[in-house]
Image 1: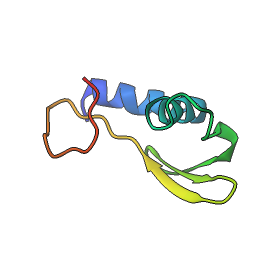
Image 2: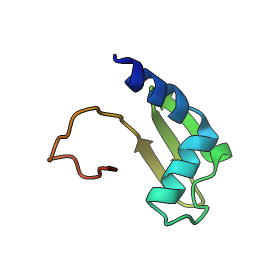
Image 3: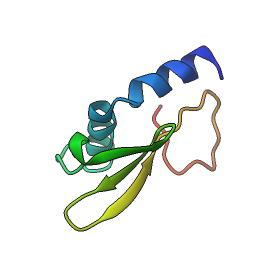
Image 4: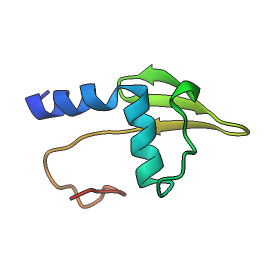
Length: 74
């Protein structure tokens, strides 16, 4: 694992940052995912038990462009 990949993985592993990332990118800034509702599943995969839903959320960093990826931030 490269240094930048490890740095991003460590940074996003914090539940508050993970929730902020998803709220900002997926929910347009609305506070839907709360850090206290997240449970670490493995690596940077969190299980979120909201009011009525159970969702697996994942975040992965990559250094090279892969055009088949569904979401990219440039």
